[in-house]
Each structure stands twice: as C-alpha cells, then as structure tokens.
Amino acid sequence: MGDHQVKGYASHGESWSIALSLKLATYNLLKSDGLSPILILDDVFSELDEDRREKLSQIAKTAEQTIITVAVESDLPKSLSGDRYLVKSGSVSKL
Image (cartoon, helix red, strand yellow):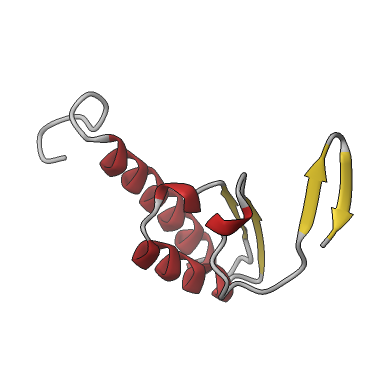
C-alpha cells in the first residue's frame, strides 16, 4: 500500500481484498494467454460484503470451471448455479 508493506500495515479486510485481487489477476493472466484455468475460491465469500460477493460471483460465472468452498451455505450467493455437494464426517453427498 503505497510505500508500506501490506503485512503489518493493512487491515484484515484490506489484506483479504489484496490477496483476492492477486489471485484474480493471476487467473486473468492465464486466461489472456489462451489457457482455461480452473478458478478455485476457498471460503472467500465469508469475508466479503454483499456487493463484493455479487461482483465475485459474476467473475466466477465466466470461468470454464469453478470450484467454490464455503463453511456456511448462506455465504454462497444465490445467483451462482451448478452442482453442490455437502462434505460432512468424511462423506460426500450431492445436494
């Protein structure tokens, strides 16, 4: 952030946003090279407000393949469709 290192200077939310931005930049760079990367989002929606959740879900919809994990199902925007699975006590079941 400017001349400061993010670690130790940025808030938790700012650090989270920067990390997510870097991940999405990497994804976009691979796409621009003609590749079809898998977008993996591991429990990122819990840290975002409703507006940012919706913006990220729009990005996820453009990916050829997306894997999203959430600890709390209500963190997942309703606008996202696709197969959903529940992993519980070592078992996987399709919802």
